[in-house]
Length: 250
Ligand SMILES: Nc1ncnc2c1ncn2[C@@H]1O[C@H](COP(=O)(O)OP(=O)(O)OP(=O)(O)O)[C@@H](O)[C@H]1O
Image: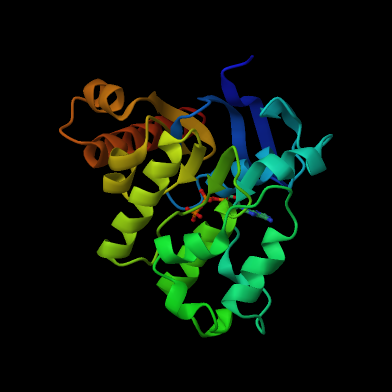
């Protein structure tokens, strides 16, 4: 049986003249936590959308849990959890109603009441989703991605807007699920989060991979002290190369 949960080979995604993802390749092993990092507009969400078959792409091959999102979408969505942005949910729906609704879509859902407790959202069960605070909505979006008991989960901007305590609660929850075998693919702008969670990371800039490996390998290669400094080092280096290329073609 393959050890790979995700394989992306030579992904190219264009928006008219803009190459948002430029020959990106990556692999995620089953049972690991993988972080896709990069500045605003680097191409992270676009990559996830292509992986999940929500966007067409010009070139590349993508396999998730041995399936193609374009060919086997139904099968894949039974096995993969996706964190949608909170704006995706209907306004006039209560927290417990959306939990019930999403649970009903899957064959072996988790106990959503237990998840509400674990995410400290039990007190909000009868509140309208629209009335939740930004952080509560963010936690709910992570919870909803886990409700189906997935083998792999895609979490885009995992803890944006969460307070420090809530962030740590979400990390602990994800680590616990990861120890039980859940493969996690996440994007984040917080390097402490990435250091705490990720086995491997890939830093992209203008859709191109500029560094990948374990956080330790990336720090070592950059000669810096921590992942945040290493991240900035690789982003700066790429910008310098881009400037030199632009200059030499003048
Ligand atoms: N539908 C679209 N049409 C045209 N351009 C788009 C579209 N969606 C994204 N882009 C552009 O593609 C690039 C990559 O966007 P993307 O949302 O993938 O970046 P990101 O790394 O997820 O950024 P952020 O960290 O800000 O969420 C950006 O320059 C963005 O403006």
